[in-house]
Image 1 (cartoon, rainbow, N blue to C red):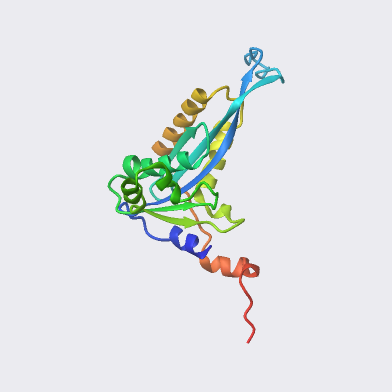
Image 2 (cartoon, rainbow, N blue to C red; image 1 turned 60 degrees about the horizontal axis):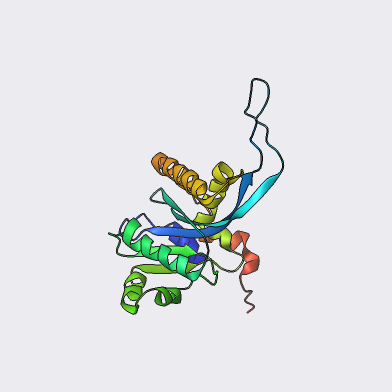
Length: 208
C-alpha cells in the first residue's frame, strides 16, 4: 500500500509517467421498442423490456498527473487482450517514455508472463523493459486511480442502455476526448502518513 501511496506523491516526469490501469464489463442492451421523445412537461419514456446483446470489456488507462486517460473496448478480458494493451501503452501512447510505472490490481490476467505467451521473446522483453508494475494489495483496489476514473465513466457515460459494441466505443471515445481536452486530473490527498494513522489496524503490532 505504501508503495502505491508514495508513487502518487512523486513529481510529474513525462519520461517516467505513472499510469493506473483497471477494467470493467458493460452489458449491452438493445431496445425492443422505440422510445417516446421528451416533450414540454413530459420526460422521455422507454419500455422496461429489452434484449440482451452480449457483454463488452472496458480497459481504462489513466495518467493522473498528465491529465490523460484512454478507454479501450474489447470483446474479452483475457491475457491476450491485456498483453496487447501493454504493447499499445508502450508503442502508441508513450513511445518517448523511458519507463512507465503501471498501477494495477492482482487479477490473474495481469501477468507479465502473458507477454511471452502472446509475442516473440524478444518483443515481450522489449515491452517489459519499458514497464514497471506496482500492484495494489488484496482488497485494496481503491488505491488505483484508474478505478476512480472508471467510476466517473460509469456515471457520466455508461449508466444507460447501450445497444452494441460500436456504440459503446463511440460514446467512450467522445467521453475520453472531452475529459482529456478539459485536462481533468485527480487530486490525491491520502498519504503514507495518513495510512499509518487511519489504517493502523492493517500494520503488524510490535511488542517489546
